[in-house]
Length: 352
Image 1 (spheres, rainbow, N blue to C red):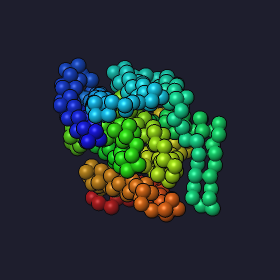
Image 2 (cartoon, helix red, strand yellow; image 1 turned 30 degrees about the horizontal axis):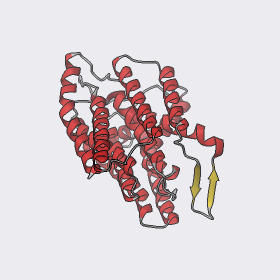
Image 3 (cartoon, rainbow, N blue to C red; image 1 turned 90 degrees about the vertical axis):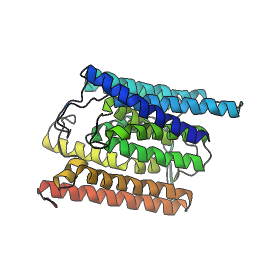
Image 4 (cartoon, rainbow, N blue to C red; image 1 turned 180 degrees about the vertical axis):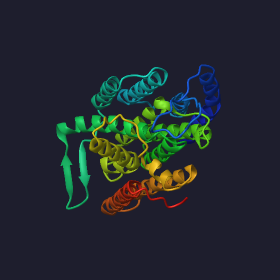
């Protein structure tokens, strides 16, 4: 019941709040800038991330309050609140950047500081486990920089991919839904409530962001959603690393990860800054092949759903088979990115 409450309350809040946010942004001429990475040409307000964040926050806090009423002994670990404090930091950083552009160096420093706070609160990937032979590595002290890199990297990967109506929001919705199901099946109440609240807020936002979009999430939304996708797997405490661990976390976020690696590689080869925007992201390549915006969303959503299904299979199959399924998903998505690079490089169009 609390999971449904969390989802519905977040969804309803975002659905009601975002039109007001949109009108406020238009009145104050707060529009998304047009650059080489973006596809839109008109003036579209960019503060939709505020609706996502506060929808999530109110939905989750409401669910916690509802749980306390039903079960007075229920509580939240102090360290758990560190997750939400850092989440507010990512949202606020993106909001300030939406209103007044910040330097990339400053944003990176703040993101690292917030990620370090999460790690110091006790949330990190401590083990890398692959069910072959078996293969298990205790990351030791390396777990700290690895987790910081993971949080900052995924937050920026989602931000980097936010260049098409409904893209970052849809990918994030599928990702948090996967974790909501995993946490629900394993009886982890607080993480499940958080994931459900995030799903509700994102879905409410997508009503206004699905093409043609009337509002964008901005950096406040994309950084916060990337942060959520990074920290949700850290909240799990399953003994089976094939259900809640680094490999499943990478699988859920594989599309943004591959797109970011591709961006780093091509900009390194061109000898330009990593921050230089271009139109060679995965959705740009699909658009160049002749697919429409909604067809591109259908393709990328399908890939994310398949990857999520590979992760969820860990609930029902052996760890080894779950790992094989995830690796198959990695191989398929990696192959698609290679093929898209070849087609784009040779200016091949499938549809005119």
